[in-house]
Image 1 (tube, rainbow, N blue to C red):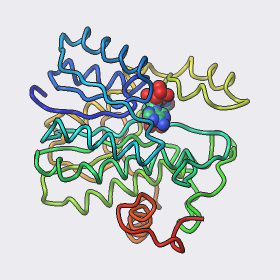
Image 2 (image 1 turned 180 degrees about the horizontal axis):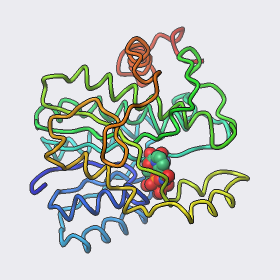
Image 3 (image 1 turned 30 degrees about the horizontal axis):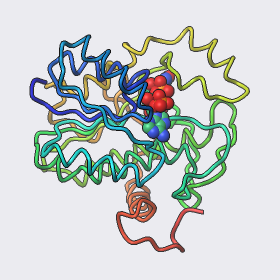
Length: 289
Ligand SMILES: NC(=O)c1ccc[n+]([C@@H]2O[C@H](COP(=O)([O-])OP(=O)(O)OC[C@H]3O[C@@H](n4cnc5c(N)ncnc54)[C@H](OP(=O)(O)O)[C@@H]3O)[C@@H](O)[C@H]2O)c1
């Protein structure tokens, strides 16, 4: 990974921080995108200490805001002409329904629309840096998603365990990954997604009334270091340099849900997402309700 530039979102905590630390140890130059300056600076110092590298950079953005995503891309491009690996890792699961300033339910926004927008805004840079890679963090929870393309902002109130919106968002990530792989065929940019396993991280601390239960359950989950292994593998291993459009679990390609292979659905989702992120002119009548 020496000389490679890796941009990773949500790099100040959990799986993202461990992914960044491991890639820095391999010699990559890291660009950490974090929301909180204090947490970002301390992650940057930790990563630099662990890897003996001073080339780690920090960019700040609240990725729930599409304007912030656009700003952070502009800041990155002002300094870097190339990008070897983009790791879309930042994620959250909100238990209450609220919309972002862009009018999108928050779990869908951070887990799906942000990676969609960020990747599209960086795809020219990735194409200029081939062979390059996109790594999207999904979840096995996508298997239980009920996906309604006509109602993408549907209420995210609690399902039986965790939120419906979380499952939908992680299915959307896989539909996006497969569609992106089709669109980037023969370009030298690969794109894969993964389930990191059940990992003891801060994501379990925002589960409303169920937080104490999830915190207790997380004691039996794997460490963030283990949880980062598949992200690190997809970002760096020569074994997957030419592999694209796959879903991985424990560094092995696995079959994702039947719905995730629906190409017509993926195309519709892509077109809707282009409008909802302003990549193409929005037609208000076509927005998710
Ligand atoms: N842990 C698991 O068992 C598990 C299982 C399946 C999938 N995943 C996925 O793994 C990924 C990493 O999560 P994690 O488990 O490592 O949880 P985590 O420790 O909570 O890390 C999530 C990261 O995303 C960042 N983030 C959240 N909202 C953001 C926003 N609006 N703007 C900028 N950054 C934001 C967080 O920043 P702050 O520190 O500022 O909050 C944090 O750095 C997520 O995509 C998650 O869905 C996790």
